[in-house]
Amino acid sequence: MFSQSEENYIKTIYHLSIDFDGGISTNAIAKQLSTKASSVTDMVKKLSEKEVVVYKKYQGVTLTDFGKKVAASIIRKHRLWEVFLVEKLNFSWDEVHEVAEQLEHIKSPKLISELDAFLGYPKQDPHGDPIPDADGNIHQIEKKLLSLLTIGEKGVCVGVDDTSSEFLKFLDKQGIGLGNSIKIVEIEPFDGSFVIEVNEKVLTISNKIASNLYIQKR
Amino acid sequence: MFSQSEENYIKTIYHLSIDFDGGISTNAIAKQLSTKASSVTDMVKKLSEKEVVVYKKYQGVTLTDFGKKVAASIIRKHRLWEVFLVEKLNFSWDEVHEVAEQLEHIKSPKLISELDAFLGYPKQDPHGDPIPDADGNIHQIEKKLLSLLTIGEKGVCVGVDDTSSEFLKFLDKQGIGLGNSIKIVEIEPFDGSFVIEVNEKVLTISNKIASNLYIQKR
DNA sequence: ACTAATTTTTAGACTCACCTAAAAATTGAA
DNA sequence: TTCAATTTTTAGGTGAGTCTAAAAATTAGT
Ligand SMILES: [Mn+2]
Ligand SMILES: [Mn+2]
Ligand SMILES: [Mn+2]
Ligand SMILES: [Mn+2]
Image (tube, rainbow over all chains, first blue to last red; front, side, top):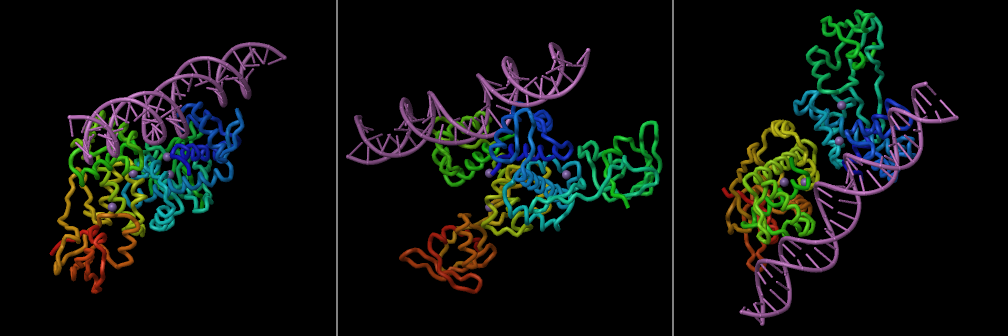
């Protein structure tokens, strides 16, 4: 149906659409995919032919409903494979992305439905991101950036915004992981850094760190 | 390192080299890969540049030692994935090939070593073919085509030569599977068909079937 | 409102993997 | 051994996906 390259574009457009609404610029797509704007223009024309995106010159692109379904199915595969790698093959959460990037392009409906069953129908991937169901529906759990909480508030760490290896390794080093209870002890007005209590330990994290951790309040 | 296409050529040349020794002809490769001889000539020149094969015009190709190692690593991946699909994801032995054909191209040494461990270091794939070790060594078990046995001989079915879906489904229907004990009851001189006893049942199989079943004598 | 800077598209070219058709080499049959 | 059939290579071309450089459109600053 779609080539590996087309799938990577579709997925990227989907992800960019979550943060900014309106048409996604060729430059934004090019940057994300480490390619050139001119290449993006070519591909976007092709995807438009295939009714995956709506494209008007100089106006950026938006996914059609069909395009969103295609994106969801690629993301479903990506995240199921990430769960597999962590749960079954001893990968750590900072090692899975690169491999899932390849595995997400394997074509086999049976493979994915069986993998889903084998993993016990997981709802989140190792980074706390929701796994779309077979119909492309995505159930986003209620969560807030830690940086938006105030002193005294409590919650559970349920996700990360940045999924780079550096950030994830940093969290490992600090002993912060998904499922940990977190309490805001203090917020430093000068630099916006947070003093938090996690796993019976008190530690200070910069505002940048706090802006990349998702908390489910309770 | 190698593109998907290059890997498919390398694997094909390896498989063809097992049956015929001497240089593998462009036509043979083309037929196997459903492509044209002229395309094969192009690719073979490229693989020769990369020291994977030795190629002399009009003389066919042979794999270098390096080429054999590369082939073994692709086949190792292919067969490990086949085991995974059958053992963990409820695929039947006639459904695995197409998917493994894709999965064999995923690049990640850790993925393969962990998969190997997860599967318990299997020695054979679902068709009874040996799984090369991480260094590219292939340990072929002792086996003989059923068609070469004589009346009264006994053995265990340990592999198939043809791995087409049609043949494998036929074996399923007849109740013949790997690990089954088989005894030659009679051989019909007229058409070379075999009367065999398998799973307490006596059945007749054509010579063509017998020529595609591997037996380990005991 | 007019430029100047920036963004986006177009034009033209490249590589990879494939194709067809024609030429060249090999093989094999009389 | 000669020539016809077959195999293999070469020549030239295509589409996908990428690139650079130049042109066109948009956006922003004064
Ligand atoms: Mn990808
Ligand atoms: Mn993830
Ligand atoms: Mn393959
Ligand atoms: Mn197999």
